[in-house]
Picture 1 (tube, rainbow, N blue to C red):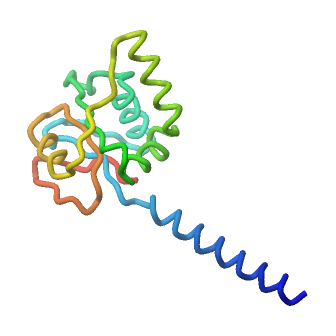
Picture 2 (picture 1 turned 90 degrees about the horizontal axis):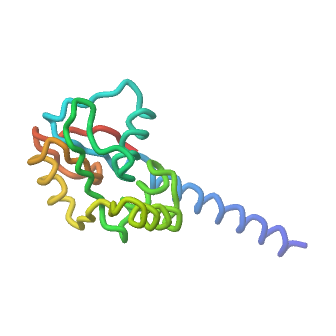
Length: 151
């Protein structure tokens, strides 16, 4: 009887540790960035998520105001990619792969270019008014880049 109680206590503690770790892994550690001269703004984070999702899935190609959107993604083997996939795109990797297969066959569209270096992502966004990317909140952002959405 004592071993069952100990097992239940250990199991509960393990679940609490896992749960607290999993929620902290994805809590406000990443940011969607755009060029500071882009001019885009929104009143709600939800609207920003919708628009960013449309840009990354290439369902929408221009920012309001007519600037061509140029999404750049983090490398698919990074935690930033995993968090972006689940929290902004609301997809798993299989669903995203299916989306791009369909897009390639029907329209010829391909996924956003993946870039491993956050530093390079920031530089690309700083140089192009239409660029949008995902980086860690720890990344230094120059004045030419602004944070659009933290997730």
